[in-house]
Image 1 (cartoon, rainbow over the protein chains, first blue to last red):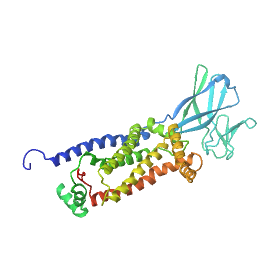
Image 2 (image 1 turned 60 degrees about the horizontal axis):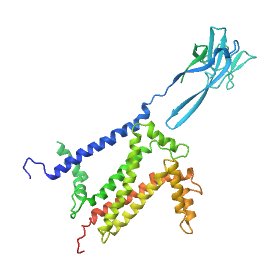
Image 3 (image 1 turned 120 degrees about the horizontal axis):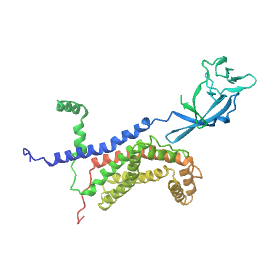
Image 4 (image 1 turned 135 degrees about the horizontal axis):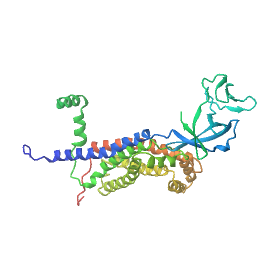
Length: 161
Length: 219
């Protein structure tokens, strides 16, 4: 056989093995990369318009609390986070919604009717009805949600982070 | 240039010697039944690789096991393929290892001087069945749960120590989170480690004492 143009038996086996091995490696190897990487390519919805019901439900004047939950799914695990907000209505045209998360260290503030202020229980931060800091360590005013009213229903724009 | 590098590397690692010992050794005239040992090894490697990938997402805990398997099937790219190969590879491995044993038996290849090759092979067959038994529980679905209930009940029929065996298998009297965790540990650590060691001895002996020829009619 040697010297002839024909391929000998051993080389034939080697070529076939290399060829089949490459195909099998690719068929199993490439999906394996996708398998490891695919969770990284999944983008979670980080924002949403949260319905708060008909705006008439919220009395004019005093801030009214509202709470909602957001569910995050990571793989086989579900995490439910609860969030709170205060709806402030003054007449038909003026409507504001503030987050109840203190801008200092993320404790939850609550509205005190006697003080006419939001008070944070952790480090005694105070905010006035418009969410401005009046006392204590908070560095920023309360977060104000973007709002919209559709067919009389109130929505706030929730953005994570 | 490439040849020069290969010669340089080979001079230091002695790869040609290893290659010649393993692949260019002299063997008697054989037939296709003699490929089943290599097929078993191939399946063992495939099961090991796909198992490593499954372990990336699988959680051996009753509150997450089923959901993590569903996540592998639906939530991850090609998870169905990896699990499918592991699932069918497991059945194929039991089959191939068993036929490999039958071939050795009918060709009387277990006789002198290959007794230890045979004995390690017996242990490997048992370990393969153990892998099947422990792996079957891990998806934590109804079939897995009740199959393991039945399997451990069968072990409990052993006279005198049966109940003790059942408790050791289950890690208590009930099939529980403890059972799932220990089956998982045995499936991915204990048995694979034992099998890797036994395969090492088995292959060393196949090369050292060689394989037997097909018996002739007058033998």
